[in-house]
Length: 360
Figure 1 (cartoon, rainbow, N blue to C red):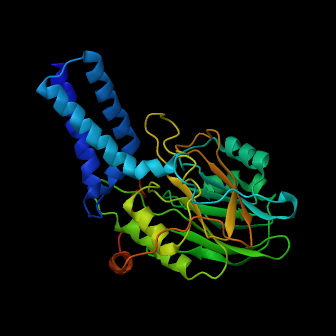
Figure 2: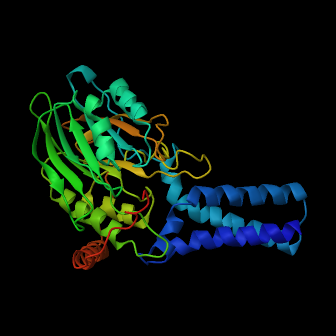
Figure 3: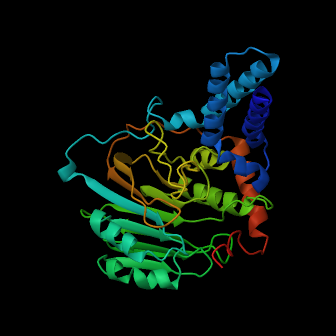
């Protein structure tokens, strides 16, 4: 009986590893991008169990073979987010006292979470230069006022549908505003931050739609790829941050990096799984920061639990005049064509965003 169970589980792990290879922008397919770590864990457990049993029956051997193939496929995607991989973003070395630095806190508060004080206390403890809050409704906007008053300037778009967003800056902003890129209910924020010393950095904060199993993911993918095209043409040093509702190793995120030319500071360092904060066995990297090659890394830290289903993420980057970073691959013609097509299709549709009723 146990060999049969192992074979069934191994076949499911292999299937879960192969489905994301399908080039379909649909939640039923793209959802399998998320559970790569879980598939590795189950496949590894199958192999260990087979070794403990010490049997070499055809069923056991088939289970071990399928589990091994599943692990190999999954490692192709997740291995780059481990310390054995080369870091894409260089670690800053130099005089930190004279460097132009910028720290960012990205925090999906979860709209239904009412543990406001934990978030307020975290902001006051780590004192980020820029704080981005997602899923902020009017109640969250009101609760955050005491700590937001400590910032120089804020850009706010509270909403009652889980797509509210707030950006607070300790420095002066210009060219700032709330944008609705492809859906009139899904806001993002773009602004230019004036750092001490006069240097400027553009920041784009976004929170696109989540993937749903019975719906295509074009809403999410098109917004991410549209920002990638903007990033490629941005003359200023650039940071893109937020809960992208997509994992770091997905087809869309990898295409985003190729098109934008931005870097992922987690590569070569760690997974920094930010979701789901409530269940240790269901976690993956969902909250991101990507940056242009003008920056080097000082700090990347996952913050403590604040009552949300996301852990807040804290990043500190140094703006330099050199480029010691690993360059991302250049985009292919297919990357550009598929991105343009996704944006074209989604911009022509008028539909409610996915997940807008989750907190109802």
